[in-house]
Amino acid sequence: MTIKPIRWVGATREEIQSLPDDARKEAGFALWTLQQGIQPSDFKPMSIVGKGVE
Image 1 (cartoon, rainbow, N blue to C red):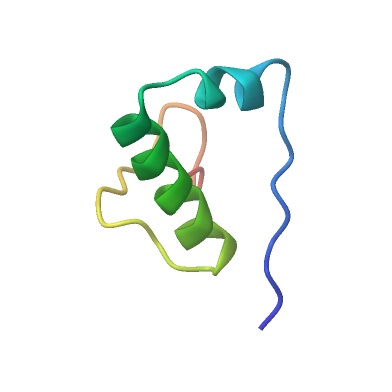
Image 2: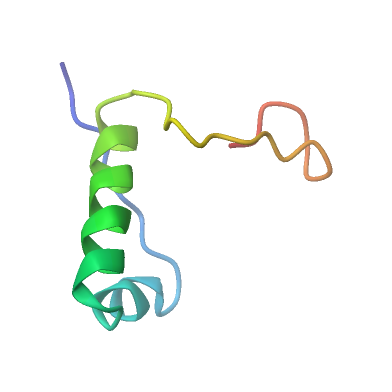
């Protein structure tokens, strides 16, 4: 299985790194899950943006 790359936009990486430990770990796990191609458990479609946007 190929791990999908993360493409950071603007200061998002630095912003995640500045979060408290618990929030940073939760965000990191969510990103890792997405990289594996697994849909997150708290997934909510963003239909206002466009069909299929996650």
